Length: 161
Image (cartoon, rainbow, N blue to C red; front, side, top):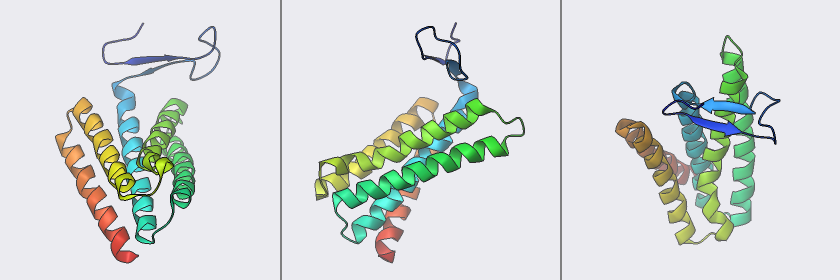
């Protein structure tokens, strides 16, 4: 039975058998989910911005976004597992999945091309995802920090290129 504020995830026909078959994602997992998703979003947005500064095409942006998503997902999941003294697999998986989801968000518009509209959509979709997370948790400060980090990331990437 799910407790208030938690989400029950079931997989498989019988809903049992493996570590994630019946996982409750609640307040204890939100730290990893928020950290992972924000890290994924800002990392990928930085890569996308850097590539845009070099006038890269949409297929190159998508390829780079896939690369950073895989690297960030493995790195964040493994890092969470190794840094946790209890070696909590669930926390590591929550961190990895959140990072993967966050990493994909800024790249989605580039499946439709590399126009200015796609660039704007990437920034807007990332900001909206941050707003949803910030609103859900009541973290106006966290949302504001992500916006500042995103602007600085984009600005520095464009300046360097």
